[in-house]
Length: 222
Image (cartoon, rainbow, N blue to C red; front, top):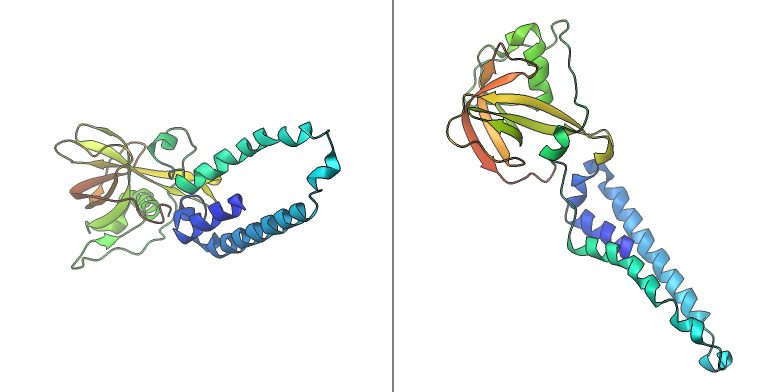
């Protein structure tokens, strides 16, 4: 029943999106209800099968030896109060990353608009490697991610991609340059507006013109 309650709590609060794809929400809801019903049936059957106390006579010491078993519920009960955080900067340096290789022209050139073009980090990296970012045409773009390490005048912007759940998460990382002042701290989510900067090393570069700190989004994955 506690496990079912934890699953329902994570589902109703959208916290489950830290660990699985949003499409899994309806199935988690069904699973949570099923677990609670299964627990209720188990409890009811157990209460029906309890023998009267007088039937035990003097030999009832064993009834006091199962109390420690309730401690097994402590970790599950803790999850009702505190949900584990989403993946962050700590895992970026310790997980495999997505490697994109340049190939034939695929993306259509961007065109100037009234506002910067909203873009995923993976698309930005793919465009950067396609003919050295020719499809950007100097058009400003807007990227959302978290900080995963910083130096003076630059920091790494990252976001995870998942196929199923957080267990298979792979970080997508690029470098933001041209910053001034104190860079945002690790795991701080930011919206970065800027333009493509050619000539990067292992990581594609984005020359920032605006950096805005934001709360972590409900769905932290691309």
